[in-house]
Every structure is written in C-alpha cells, then in structure tokens.
Image (cartoon, rainbow, N blue to C red; front, side):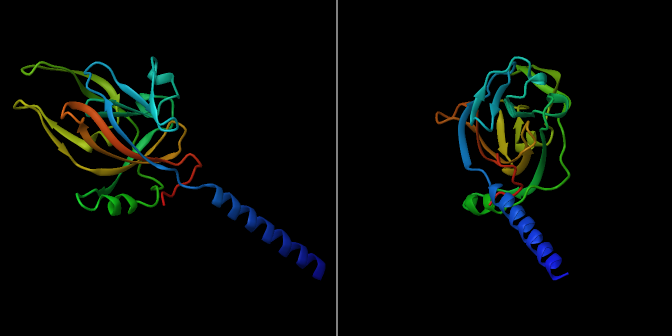
Length: 209
C-alpha cells in the first residue's frame, strides 16, 4: 500500500512539474513599435503580419492567412469574421493611454480577456473623398478596433481625434496581441501613416507581463 501511495505521489509531482514547465514556455512576446505604415490610399488596404513584424503582399485577403491586421486610412481589418478565414477578433480593454503615463498604462493590461471579442462585420468604408463629395462602399472591417481614431471631414481640413485605447486582438492563428494604435501622421505631419505598438504572444500565452 505504501508503495502505491509513493508511486501516486511521484506521478503527481511529475505531472505538476510538466504543467509548470509548459506554463514557463508560454512567455509573453516582445513589445514592438511600428511607425509610419502607409495607409493613405482610399482604394487599397495595407496588410501586416504580427509574426513577421512587417507588411505583407495580399491579393485575396479573405482566403490568405499570411496577414493578421490591415489598415485603410483610419479603418482596421482583422483576419477573421467577414474579413478572412483566420481567427481574428478584437476587444477594447477600456484602458486609455494618457500622455505622461504611457508606460504605466500600457503595462496595466496584463491579461487577455477570456471572452467579449467581436469579429469583423461589413460596414461603410470611405473609398473616395474629393473635399466636397464622399463616396462609400460596403466592406468588412473591425468596428471595434477602428474606434482608435475619429476623423471629422465635415469641414476641411480633416480633424483627427485619437482615443488611445488599448485593444486585445487575436491574430489569424488565434494568438493574443496587445495593441495600441497611437498616431496617424508621419514625421512630416502628412496624414495616412499609422503608428502602433503591439505585443504578439507567439508562444500562446494569454498574459502580457
């Protein structure tokens, strides 16, 4: 009987050690900044891969798993739902990055929410703007992640309001990404260039610290 109890204890310890090892392997990803991604076209989207850390060429976005997120002016598209066959979806964490406390606000989001995510849906996207007339088209995009900015074109020139929300999105492979899209202009103050910070957890971790 004692031998059986000892064997059970050894097995339990082995299982616990294996679980702890698996958890240790699921480390949070590196925090990266990508500056001035060109998204000024009204007719074309710019596609980006979190795993590659760069833009990718995409011709058939709804059947291509090489991309995770795409930008079109102030619009954001994720590879999931109506936009693609990936697992992409998004949630607004409710954390706002405030000027002067960027580091603290960013690190305050430590865990990916378990539920509450929204997939891309079809909605109105501006495909032409002459300054007097606006042309729109039904296209799929993330109504959640696209709230990072408000662009008011009612009275030229356009006015840009950044909301500085931190989102958690899922990449095409379903892995968690913490995302903050914080600027829409390049170093020359030209609009249509998106800058964002992200942390892609390639290991599968749901924690960000």
